[in-house]
Length: 274
Image (cartoon, rainbow, N blue to C red; front, side, top):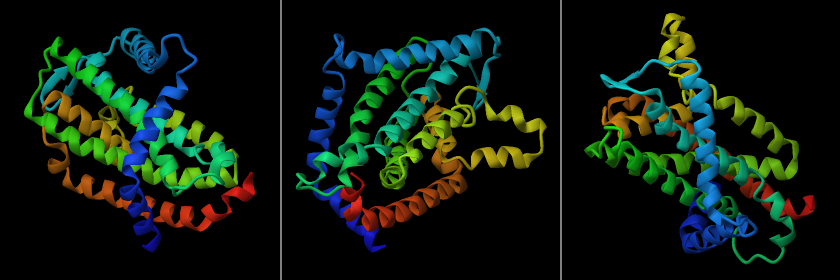
């Protein structure tokens, strides 16, 4: 518990620094590209068009029912796909954030726990732009701005908490054992097909209920369904599914407590892995 409180205090006291460095991080990643940060929008746009063509057009998907509404496959996938992009990029980048910066550790005058934070925030800016872009697109597809959009405040915060909790674990383990980063990349690619992003998990209803329950143990599914509930104005997802909300935060708290303990225990030895 002491480690968790220590990490939280470090995030609060250095939040201004996190925001400043995160924006610089985003700019530095694209400084050698002619289009610069525009590629942060182009790349996910290309990906979603490819997945829509393969899983929507070639498979001739029927409209998907969300809260009594028939939603086209493209709109349904778009509502959750950009969350996946943010989760994937932020988790992967933050997992290698410490060991890729070991050279500068001896020159730092701020706590190491904010390194994953500013890497996550550098991806968060892109996510906000993509979410706003999705909102604009939906105004032309009949899914207008609604009161349920207020849920985004909660779900964006929940997403940041989950990613940060995971990053404390993966960034520490990746520094000690570099193979962890490669394993994480493979696991996340698998999660793309197991998180209800490209196909609705409801099609598993013909199988034993235990299968659907196991799929929903993935906390990313909770966030994706929350985004869709907000975009399509179907329900206050975190309230109507309060049991799932409690489960989600239980997972986040456990991951954060474990990650904080791991990070604080090993960070004084990080320089030894240089």
